[in-house]
Figure 1 (tube, rainbow, N blue to C red):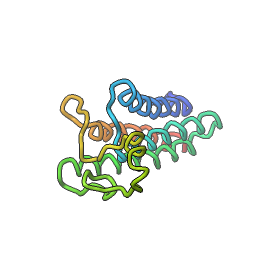
Figure 2: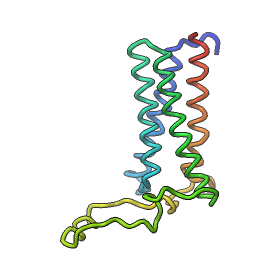
Figure 3: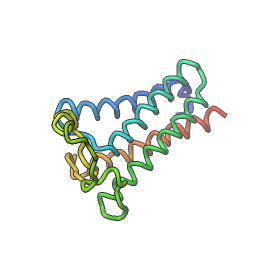
Length: 157
């Protein structure tokens, strides 16, 4: 680990963020696993991890890229922890995300809105892998990103 160049760390973090983002879209478009709003929030964190790592890599600014990855991974970890805690019944879901939430739509637009809207509530788990929800799988992924960015920050002092 001591001999790994900072830009190599950034490339690894970028591939991690891109891989997480790509796997979410692959599950959605390849297997029909529709994301809930909290899943989208986690995808935004994945995109930010990939983007910050890429910017740090191409600008040759490893500390700035790593700091961005830390911020994005911390946000992603927070959302994943909240969703897992809500799935376990320890915390409530966001009001805009639970199944009983209602959206107001004008009567004339109701059928067209229903035909084009594919939002599922956060409290409906649509997919589990080896017994764990996707949010639960996101916890170690965000910890990995935080750890990698932390090592890079310490290494490039």
